[in-house]
Length: 326
Image (cartoon, rainbow, N blue to C red; front, side, top):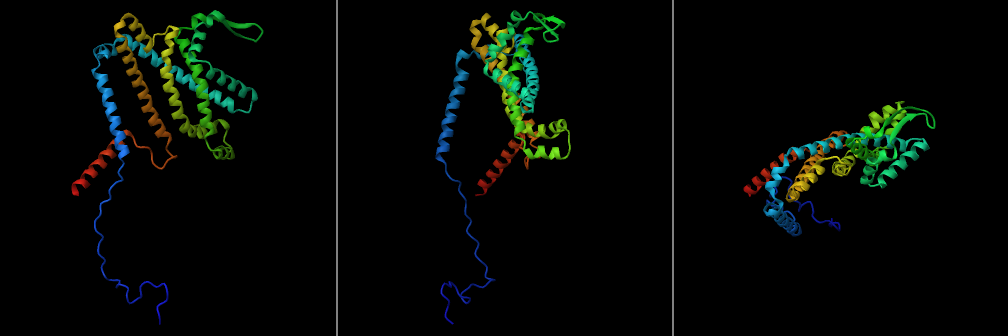
């Protein structure tokens, strides 16, 4: 019988099944060369080295005076005030933002209108204007009273006695922070899948329980990184309370700079380093909070910096062993 067209090898020509095949020659897979990446890395390293060299060798920075001022009691007192103002304002601003977000999402047109108007106004007015307006608030209203609208007052109090510099700073920053936090919280709540709301409603759970135990914990995955950005901005915004006569970290440095004009640059470096420390601490807390709320949303939790370091050392050790074996 003739061989059918298209047949490449006949049965007689096929090699026996038990014939051992030769092992393929060992080949080494070379990574793709990326000269552009290496050139960019070299340029960045050279620029970074020049920056560090100029920062450490330029006598204009006066690093000896920096070390003198860094832990002075005046600076530490201002740092404590900065922490107090930032902590109070962050808590009050977040609580106010949650209330404004819930009002914006409510079914009441009055609450929605008030929440939208507040957010629009406070995001439009510069923070320094808000602080200065509150600082001079006693000139507009010397006394404040609580009672029936257009009727008798139950009790009154002197606004100037209660509105200390600390109170003015906290109220001003909290009012401003609440407007931004409201949009962050609202965006986080809207990011929760609608099926979660429907499933909770189908189970007959109360609205408050749905929000506290189902919606808000899931919304925190979206809220946390955005609100931490706001919190970092809040820490830096505390430098404006100097204009309402509150000597925070920046205000203390400004006062010392006026007394010692030759130390202005070291004092500014002290303020810069302390703000870097505060914002870095907040970033570390942000990482662990995000990692906590990532449970159930990802297959594996993001590795911690220590775990990343261990993995990098293990990979480097394995790479060295492979190179030595070759």
